[in-house]
Image 1 (cartoon, rainbow, N blue to C red):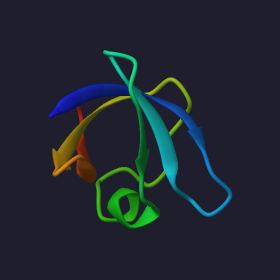
Image 2 (cartoon, rainbow, N blue to C red):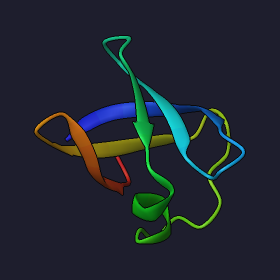
Image 3 (spheres, one colour):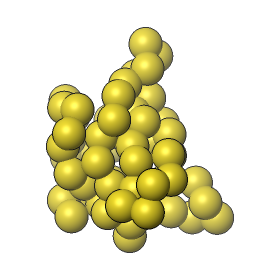
Image 4 (tube, rainbow, N blue to C red):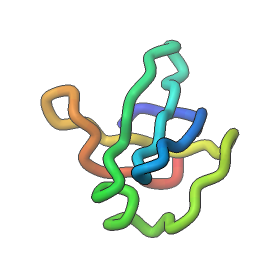
Length: 61
């Protein structure tokens, strides 16, 4: 899991997060909808699980 902060959302529902190391990741809308989070706010902290560099799950950090 990678600790990250929500940076923004796209019009189609994807969420852009920035890891603590400064890398930007796009979390697909389908991953957000499958999580316990229904509404993510800019600045919110979360943990992103990657599979082959693709976000597959988000959780509390």
